Image (cartoon, rainbow, N blue to C red; front, side):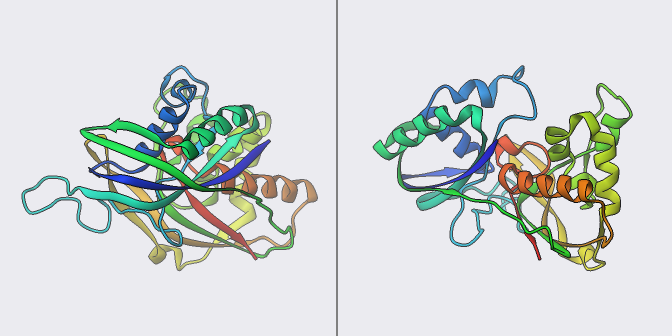
Length: 275
């Protein structure tokens, strides 16, 4: 069982950063409940991880663009920092097995968290909280996906081929790539079949070639590529009930838990609409 949570915060002591802000949210949750340290940072923790976060968000689906649109560097050739202060919110998607840890973190955030982030003393206090219900109608004909934070799609065919290493990120915004991690989490026993179904169930709008974009972001001192923008797909009309049911589960999971890989670092936040 997965659930989506929205937490509003106020950052009362500003700080500068050149890192993608998903890193700050992760650090904040660990500070609010140290039990999250193992989940986020232990390399032997099972993957895909049972938690996803978004970057810090402001307004309607906006986040501080640390490096990405379009200049990464300032005139001196170094990464351009931004200042973080004031009111923000972020989303947390989580497996029910971590509900207790999440509630402890939220309670501590409402009390206020004072901690060291890099060279800065930061004070953060929660100002609001809500759990978001995610539902899709199975009668939809068109699928809209807006990639808010950079998305990194995992190659499903490496897994299908049985490769134990050499997994690559893929950048073509097509459903078998976009939802490959979601399909693996939900349908491991029929993963290959599910990837094939994602391939034939949706066909893309040609406008996607112009509305989905490459973006450069800064993370841990590295400049790396990701996918942002807007994509539109059409659903194949004739579809078996079992296939449609599985697809609805994948869309719901993707809205709650994000798409692609590195979702626990703030990547892969997508807003999905089915009409």
